[in-house]
Length: 268
Image 1 (cartoon, helix red, strand yellow):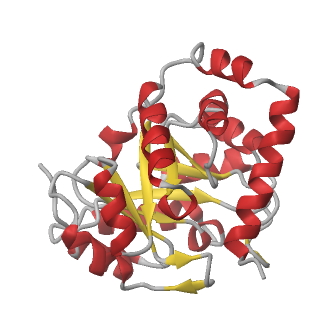
Image 2 (image 1 turned 90 degrees about the vertical axis):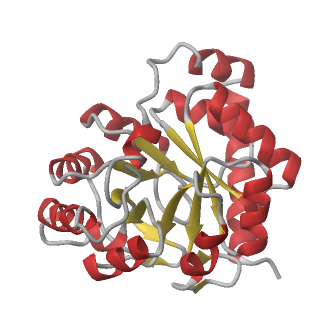
């Protein structure tokens, strides 16, 4: 029986093939190289303290989170609250996102944008650039080593930033071998549908000192943000609690303030 992760990847591959049948790889590649230059996601990640990557998402597998009719308005609230980057979920089958959502967000704000999707094909990287992405996540679990390394190279050839997502030490070692500059530790394992909040503390100390470290999933409040920061997080991705907040702007502002606390490590 396929895991949820396997089902997601199969759906992504099918959807990419359908889009490529309408717009060829040659065409999407040409379009991506004619876009405005990407925003500097790396600079945003290197800002002092522990940065906030605010994520726009409507659902997770099997569960609705929020009814978001205007992703651009939510993005403006996040930016007004001081978010360093904005992530936009674009996977449609399980997360109810879209590339069009990301394009609308891109036009609404000035901070860098990270696509949140399951990237398995070069087509998606060029496509994401066309729809406004500045940072691309690459999940080690979904890619063999040659494909991982080639996709990192392709992301960087478009002057974007690759965030290599890992779940355990073995995957982190593969990220290091692939010379990943940004490593994201995802507490959520879609293969087992479990959440391991200790994953970041287990993995981060083994990463090279120059590696930018991002914590994904399971961050709900300022206390947990500070916990991640104490173990070396340069930034955290927060989605569910933000999109459900009574005031996304105020909650973002509170998280940003926590990330600037003197106890948070700084690369400067």
